[in-house]
Length: 173
Image 1 (cartoon, rainbow, N blue to C red):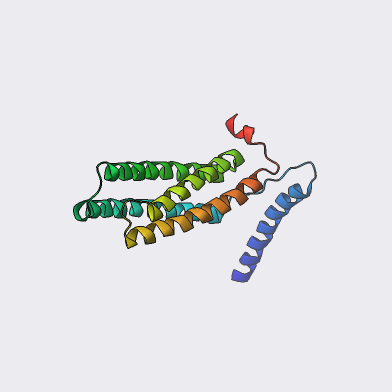
Image 2: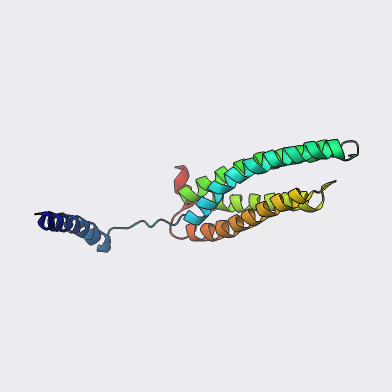
């Protein structure tokens, strides 16, 4: 009946696992453990969407500032150029971080973390040292600072955990 087939399935599954666990207990067989960070991957996933939202919001605020405030000669163009470069660098940084996390590569995760420090500093610039700073700039870039700060911390912990047993040069062979 139903209970008997369920027990048969459980026994078959246990036998299947028994073979796998006996191999794992064998000292000659090396087991791999996943060391990539799910928390970091989720944070990078949501940050990709936030970067797009931040880009649209900042373009709108630049248009508003240009129409309402008297910008000196080339300041607006310079700030727009810096923000476009920041957005492109952030997209690359998030791709690199996701790749490093999935392949468990400590060198690329270190580069991701260093680029994160640069992105953090650019967000601090947009909060404090723009020619004209609106409240929406402070709020939106402060959220970005918090997200990037968490990514830097999780990236450092991930890079340290990736440095364990695995040689990073194996990824490129």
